[in-house]
Amino acid sequence: MKLRLTILSLMVLVLISTIGVQACRKKEMEVPKGPTPVSFDIPQGFPKPEYDFAGNPLTKEGIELGKKLFYDGILSADGNFPCASCHQQFAAFATFDHDLSHGFNDAFTTRNAPGMFNLAWRKEFHHDGGILNLETQPLAPITAKNEMAETVDNVVRKLRASTTYPPLFAAAFGDAEINSQRMLKALAQFVVTMVSANSKYDKVKRGAASFTQFEQAGYTVFQSKCATCHQEPFFTDGSFRNNGIGLNPFLKDGGRIRITGNAADSMKFLVPSLRNVALTFPYMHDGRFTSLQQSIEHYRSGIKQTPNLDPSLQLGIALTNSDIVNLTAFLKTLTDSSFINDKRFAP
Amino acid sequence: MRFPSPFSVLLLIAVMLSGCQREVDEELSNAQLELTITHQSGGAPLQLGTPYTNGLGETFTINTFKYYLSNLALVNGNNVVTIPDTYFLVDDETDSTKTIKVQVPAGTYTGLRMLLGVDSTRNVSGAQTGALDPVQDMFWTWNTGYIMAKLEGSSPLSSAPNNRIQYHIGGFAGTNSSLRTVTINFPAPVQVERTMQVSLIAEIMRWFDAVHPLPIAQTAVSMTPGPLAAQYADNYSKMFRLNSVLIP
Image 1 (cartoon, rainbow over the protein chains, first blue to last red):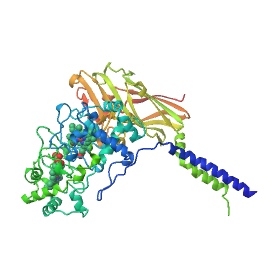
Image 2 (tube, chains in turn cyan, green; image 1 turned 90 degrees about the vertical axis):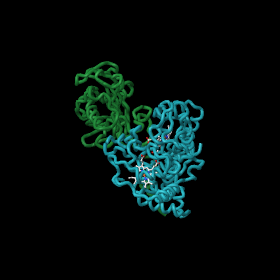
Image 3 (cartoon, rainbow over the protein chains, first blue to last red; image 1 turned 135 degrees about the vertical axis):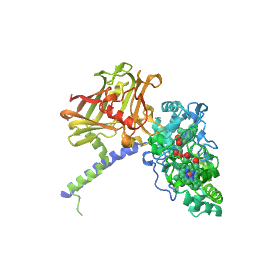
Image 4 (cartoon, chains in turn brown, cyan; image 1 turned 45 degrees about the horizontal axis):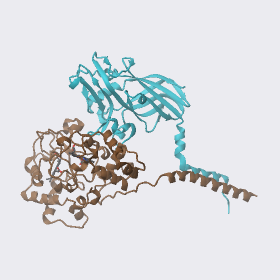
């Protein structure tokens, strides 16, 4: 008798628990088959990314949508200025051979377009660090009168009205709803996958290549004279510094002070990465130097004594002519040709 | 062989069901807070486009008045029940934004607390939606951050183009933060089972002089985070007062 009761209670238990588990599982099963997850690989020697992938999980469809948006003029007022008009893959996503880039209505940008890569490890964006999240970065070019000259509202409206985009949003996000958040997350998914870590320098680090004598000599000079600011592996320490280039009399750009309003930040700019630097000419925030030699020569003989000049540059940097030749050779080893030829980033 | 005791059976069931815990939590927020805000100018309902005179004797007209309220919380003495994910953009032009409804746990409360603005975390957390969507035109694009409060209009005392007055108050970091916590105390503890109606009055005149006298003649336009923006925030954080608390 006792045995039978226990068996009965066991059966009840099994029944209840299956119902319980079923109730929970049912919800999981109702979720439609979603987009295909993509993992983000951290190159050897790179730290943990800053970007919050948990808040915007990478998917094949999300990245594809982001790429389509990046190359589509629909984000600009007259259709002529997609992101890619200023960010060209063969120039490591800087604007090729332009000090300032062209935007809407024959206007120029007020700064030199930087290359785009390794954005996942960045905390601050733009030359003055004014932008604090990769996802909200596109709002700046989209709404700037001298760049894409649009409103976010109107861009969303155009995407909704198109025939191509609703299915792409549905594939990426599970339903065809189009809003600014989804657009920005898709763009972020695409640009965050732009990782450049396969230059000759990286291969040397991995033991898969070796420097020439000149490159090695340049690397040695670099480590002792440049790396305090242009720190490996990103070739920037992420700080804001006045490297003594002096105020551009036409643009009158004070850099970081524009964001903080603090006089101590006048003429400080974000230390740029030097990866792919041979491709991203012209140089500095205003594109004033056309060659690497000129940029290096600046540190030797061109430092202007302006307020907040970095203490380490007060006397300039002592460099011999052969140091400059060797440094140039070394900087060219930072060119990542597999990155600029990577089909994943091409239209 | 021993068969499971009734106790372990119960335990097992509890374990199986705990996978669905979340809904139970949500069910705890079984009451509703209805927060209504009435905008006034000099004690009368605010009319956009109508000339007023501020406490400093200056004439002005408003055509846009918007601000964020977030991180709503109910207070009971030292206990603070923060209501998760509460972000609202109150826009004078749109009446529906002046009534805010949120689910709250039933209980006894002595006051209401809210953040005037958008907390620093959400300023830098990437693309947002709803009240925080950049289409609301309350987000600075080149200098990341929300405009916490926006007042626009005109005044003959303004020397800006078209006598415009334009205050976009924001900044979420450091000494120049424009974030302000507003606490509204109820006259007596209120016991809420189903619905609680809190009615607040926001007096626009406070914008110019509640703490710091900020004449239009001196500043007609303020568009960046900084010490001045922080002073406006000090002022407008004093614009709220309790009109009534009702348990209908």
